Image 1 (cartoon, rainbow, N blue to C red):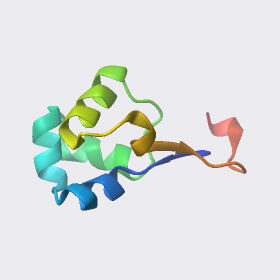
Image 2: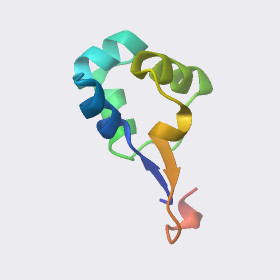
Image 3: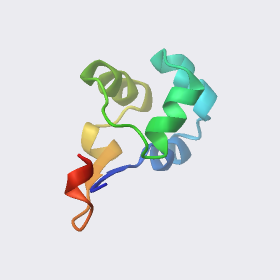
Image 4: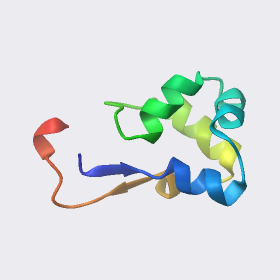
Length: 74
């Protein structure tokens, strides 16, 4: 998929665990892992906003586009 999720990068910068972030955002650690590992098909803007608030970052810090991915998957 051409969209890459960099939640793990922000977690490392903030020295925060997946469990702590999931609790702050209000989603399960399993659902956060699906998003973090790039297996999610979609993300709600409310979830993205909560992630940005918890990590004190912008959406562009969490998501980026990489050319050459399979656009048919989107």
